[in-house]
Structure formats: C-alpha cells, structure tokens
Length: 611
Image (cartoon, rainbow, N blue to C red; front, side, top):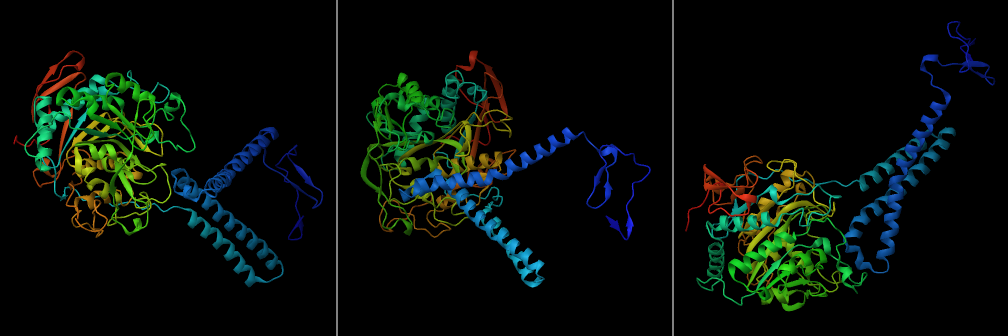
C-alpha cells in the first residue's frame, strides 16, 4: 500500500511479534501495540458473546410479533367477536405493530439497495430520494408502532364537585391494620390462607369501620343507624332492618373469570383456583362482613347472597366461607357444587350512549332485583389495560349476566374506558351502573377490601406499597362509605400516589366527575339507565374531590373549607394495641392478642358531631 507515493515501513520502536500481520496483496504491514492486545481465545469469546447477545436481542420483537399475529389470526378468523376478548386486545397491538414494522423494513431495505445502485450509476438525485424514502418508511413504522401514553394533569386539590351522600355526607372511613396481613409473597403459601391473613384482625377492622362511620360505640347500633338512614332516604320510613329482608353482597372475583364454552366444568376440582395469588376479594373480609350481618344485624343466612355473577366461586374461598356460613347463598356463573347460579331478570339496564343502539339488552340478575339491600365490596386495584383504576363502580362490570359471558351483540363496555377513550368530558358507562335503581340505587354500603392491593391484568399477585403509612408492607386496609363517588375518589388518590402508570392515564377520574355532576355532566350525556329513552336524568351520585397532599391526605371537610369528602383514618399505632379517645387526646389500652374491641376508637381527622 502506498501513501502519497511513499511506502509504509515498520517503526523501529515496535517489536515484531505474532500480532504483526503481513498483507501480501498490498505489500504492507499492519500492527497493534502490545499493551492493547488480548489473547486470541479471549478475544474470540468476547466477539462470539457479543454477537450472540446482539442476535438474541434483535430477534425478540420479530418473534414476539409473529407469535402474536399467528395467535390473533387463529383465534379471531373462526369467530370475529373474539377480537374483543382481553387476550386479543393485548395481542393485537403487538401483532399489528409487527406487520407495520415488517412492511417498513422491507420498503426501507429495498429503497437503500436501489439507492446504492443509483449512486454507482451517478444518478445522485434519485439516490437521495430513495434514501429519504427508506429513512422515512422506517420512521413512519416506528411512529405508528410506538404507543403515545396520554397522562393526566395533576387534579386540583380540595375543589369538591357534586353533592355528598350518607349519614355523614362525604364520609369515608379508612382502617389500616398491618397485623391483618402476614405473607412473604409468592412462594410462601398464598395470601388468602388463614396463616397469612388474620381473621381476628380483619373482624376487628370491619367492626371498627362500621362504628367509626356511624359514630357509635356498639356494632348493632351502628348497623341500625345505617339501615334507618337508607330506608328514610328511599321512602320507606324511619325503620331498621326487618327479618326476612334480603341482602346481596357483590364481591370482585375477576381473577376467577372462566371462558365456559372452552373449559367445561364436570367435577368439583374444576373449581380450584387457576390464579392462586390473584387479588380477589379476601375470603376473610367476606367472613367478617357475614359475621356482622348475621350476629349484629340479625339477618338469616338464607337471606344473604354473596358472589360475583360473571365468575366462578373457587373452592379455596368457598370452603373457608361455607364452613362457617353453610346456609348463605354463594352466587356465581354456573351454580354447580352447592353454589347458586346467576340468572337473568326481566329488568333491563339501558346504556346512555347511541353506540348501544341495536345491541342486545343487558339485564340485572334476579338476586339483585329480589334484594332489599346491596353491599358493594370491591378491591383496591389499578386497572392496567382498560380503566386505570378498578374500585366500587368498576365492580359492577361483573354484575351483568351475559350468557355466555362473552356473547356477541352486546354493547362493549370497555371501549368507553380511559385507555380507549382518554381525556375528560366523555360518556362513561360506569355512571349508568352507579345510577341504576337495582345496582347503585339499592346500595346500603360501599366497601373496598384493601388488604392486598395490586395491578389488575398487568400482574397476577399483589405487591407491597412504599408510600407512608405502608412503608414497604402490604396495604392492609379497609374502606367504607355511603358515597360511591367519595370512596372511589379516595381510592383513586391512594393508587395514583403509589403507582406512576395506569392511575395517571388521562381520563381515569373522568367517571367520578361525570357521576358527581350526573345531572349536568361535562360530556353532556343524558344519564338514564332505567329507561330506554331519555326520561329521568340521574341526579348527582356523590362528591368528587382530590386531597390536599399525599402526606396529610386531607379533604375539604377535614379542613373545614368545603362540603366535599371527610376522610376518617382509624389506625393501629402500636402492634396489638387499640387506641381510644377522640382527636388529639389519646389513651391506649393493651389487650391480649388484640382480640377484645375497645369501646371508643382513635380517629385521625375531623369528626362530625352526633346527629
């Protein structure tokens, strides 16, 4: 090789060695300084390892996209309605992204190859056009396949809207007791087992929540106040619970949804849990509520129905509950092996959107229509594929009996959730569920089971919380209210503060705003789920408000600045210790095993006077 007419020669300062290679074709020597060299075998291994890592990483998306495309086509082509299934909703973006990426890659490679030929032929203008086309096709493919997440702005603090509901309007009671949960996570048995969830502690949480909500010292008196308030506000007079009146408890067993037409049930073992650690309503929380209704209210077991009409009631939960309450009716989809099947009633639910026109009519279950009271027991979860959060309102997605569960022809309740329809000021089907006369209209009490909070769809087990007062432990909480908007607002604030993904999606709190202003919602929707035409518009379903800050967690009624939410916090400050007193004057009493209940509770927050 000649450089400006001079032949390269070896420097006398560099020793000839085995790394000095002669290039016979160009009659020159090339070399590398000894201090920068590695043994040949080490160098080869590094090169092979780097190539292997790069090769494997580069194939992840194409293989995943191809598999998603094959899965989507195999499932949807025979039955197009399957495109609405959650699994297909997850597969479709990956499959479509793969197709777009493949098309972009083909166009780009073809354009670059032609550009090289044009350059060799001195056709420079066409070369530039082809290169631009290649780069543009890859950019377009990338932009199409990249999801743009629309995040919401920070809600305005302490600006309540709507009309607060309940004995003490807008009150939400939050009981936090870390002693209720003792589980090390997956691999340490399962959270719902008795050795991991303390039934005594959960019983205490339920009793304390009811008493704190009603400002009563006795359980029976608190429940009597609840029933009397409900009956007075529903035109039944100043009367409490009467023997023989029926109560339905709607729980959330979404982790137990079964696609019945593909997985037939023939033996009792088919009712075993499939997802062992999913965040369903805790059986201990169900037992605690049943004990209150039977022992304190005086309801007969046979007058109580508990379950999720869209799901199966798994053996693991059923056995724990049935052992203590054998005559309670356990509601579920099929009704096998001692359970009660959910059935259609003749009472329709009408969606307040033109998109429901021409669709099959939804009907509420018979047990709901026959019930005198309903208790909505939801779970504390985010919703990472559709809704952002799933609390009391979303719990009613499981209340409608659609047979089979994913039958064609019904209005798609998921398309008007925040992931599909982001932003505020949109029609939200959750408002229709909250306002229907046999759903929200019959609800005596709203409860959120927050023992083990988690991320629905994204994860199959609960996760510990890092924010105070949880500090790296399970959420170990229970929430109760008579205001469906207020309780979900508190849940929204907690979930949004803990996690930075789904709860921050734009439109996650839109249903709360729509419900609070149901009489004149920002979307302009005429919410009337009880009539086919626009006849009677819903009134405000409750009060929506964002807390002042994540540290103090105070709302306008706590601060005395407005008629919004009042958050009453009931805590176990010391392990196995019950705190008594009100406000800042506290007295603690130590009880063996924290089994005995204190007469008065420790409340953090502003307490409304007795009526």
